[in-house]
Image 1 (tube, rainbow, N blue to C red):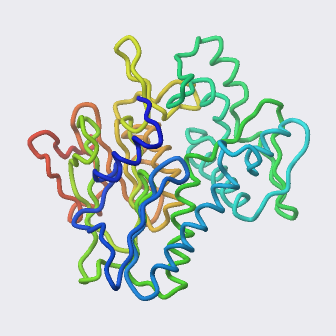
Image 2: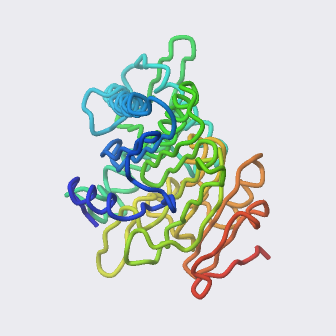
Length: 350
């Protein structure tokens, strides 16, 4: 499914997003400001309650711009592209922001045993999902590009913040974690300005600061991955001071010969992940962590994904399968409500 920037803006501004906040107005008031714009390849929505919020919202979007300039594959002179340009040749000194993102990405690659891998770039580029060149590559083409996917071939030098790729042709792609980092940085900025209540949404990444102004928890809707329309939710999770990040097969995909090819690629096979999971939501304190985990858990599947989550403190998960089953971690039982209980049912691992 291909959408240009203008169509994306219209759809996202009219509908609740992949994960949306319920009961939130898009109007500016004396004590709040709402802004929506296209950044980091998605629609960014930010609402802030408090004093001097116009200035704070402007600073937040400037921060997102700064991070995008450093980490986007679509910006020719970004730090990520500089690293990729000199793959197999030499390392590149990068900013602290870029270094932190790549370091965290490698940590999650190790934790997930390579099911989350920031060196997936050559395979992502080969598929071209969401671009004008999207295709189903041949097995030989995939096998060739998979030789370049290996997070252990990324070398970090903490003293100089130098990053190098050991093989020519390797491509770092931090699209699976950079938006989470940006959300955390914005929340940190808001806190530093004395803001007590706010939310930011970057596509499937939602972070909330504090509670709603009336003191109640935020209600975040989880997209129904089988719905025809964006904004149709299957359930609601109630949170405060948390992030809710979802990876789903409905986000970017194309259909060829009746088969849906989505953008969440398994670094082990090179193909879109197919293990029964069609949506993976992570609830945590850090969007930085949740962003990587939602991808890893989606690829791992229900059993292995839940095993990974069980090893992490303060992290919860909601997994939706092709069979209309929903698996949730124990601590979410009083915080998550299914709104489509005629279609989806809670299930337990046997």
